[in-house]
Length: 352
Ligand SMILES: Cc1cc2nc3c(=O)[nH]c(=O)nc-3n(C[C@H](O)[C@H](O)[C@H](O)COP(=O)(O)O)c2cc1C
Image (cartoon, rainbow, N blue to C red):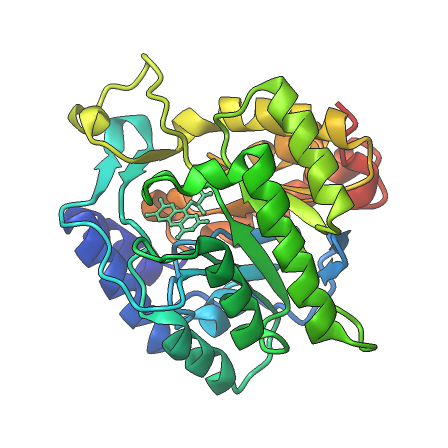
């Protein structure tokens, strides 16, 4: 990281969390983000659910809700950027404060509640992308007061089809009451049935776009096997494991641990990696996995890959380390793969 970026990150940490985030998005939009030489082959290329990634480190959903800074984040070295969650209509989200840094725990608690500018703005921002410098996904959600949540996902797919490189059906945010119920068997049948129907209509005889499903870390073994089977039967291309947790490990020290919402960052690493391992065992190589939760260095990215992830995503670590982190994770990953005698990243997926 350059001294300037390091200073910027330190200063941002002094601001209330949500203001710091807003300022970061503004600075990135003005071209003040770190730059990486993304045109050189990384030696870390990998295929995930039909996407060919230049490297396996992606930006997790929630950082760029309205898809304003995908270009600078790709320029910073991310292998893919997931924008959103976007809902059909704009919504304000929950009352502030709703984002908390648990500094002692290197964690974050958020109960943002899908604050976003809505599909029209998101679509406009995707259309404005002049420089197509990498892969951008759209993470879709439902409005809090929607009368038909399943249809909200269908509306999202229809509005953004052909504009984003992949889609994520997000049914795992803990901050929209009842959203996680869409992970239940009957609700998932209805939702994924509609998603595959809309996908078939939109695709016609052209190649389709990958559709991923993002799940919660708070799931039992029986649910994991069932979710894998249902996802496969409806043609979902990869599973993103996982969103934030509603659990509060007893190890937490920060006074903000009592705040309601989803916990992310370091305290999520172990549990989300364990769930990922269970998903890998259930998937038996038939559906790709993207590992998310507490990744903050190359070793942790490598552990997710060895546990079964073909790629990883990060968010909370950026709050503490800044966007330059992606390059050091990739550099470290490459060294670890070489040291263990793997000639490609794919060889390391699931070896543990
Ligand atoms: C402030 C904040 C907002 C988030 N918003 C979303 C969101 O809108 N949609 C989503 O799918 N995940 C969202 N997430 C979850 C992240 O994408 C990720 O799954 C989770 O934070 C675990 O990764 P991490 O430990 O690297 O942060 C959010 C996370 C944070 C910290």
